[in-house]
Image (cartoon, rainbow, N blue to C red):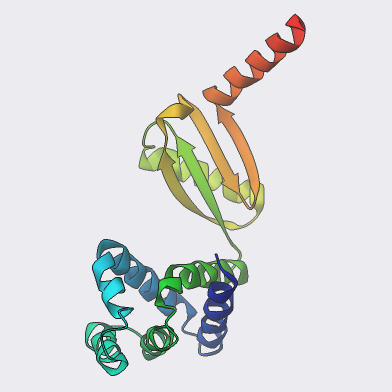
Length: 179
């Protein structure tokens, strides 16, 4: 995340928190970010210098004006005017980071070889909430190289209970014995 994204995303969060709209704006930002991810041509179009700025601002208004919070629409327009709309995803990350920090929420990234069931995710979430003392939001990723077990990253700490890490540990010990 760039410094620009941190400054702009943090500023929008401060405004949203002051107006008590932080949860609503965060949900809408996530939806807009998803729209931009699914339609990269639209984001490129909004940054196209050959299109007059007032036309690009009008496109933002037409797309989001009737559905999104006014502060968010104006924020998108500001990014467009400053020619930094490509920083929106980073702004969104900073906004979410600040929201989570203010509301005692920790994000945990869980990596496993296969998709975990809802029951497994709930059990893991409960265990991590007890461990951290915070409300935990889980992000699940699958990676076949994990082989089995789980790798969890929570607040900068990595908990690695994967088969892959155990095999690496055994391999390392065997290499130490040989030397």
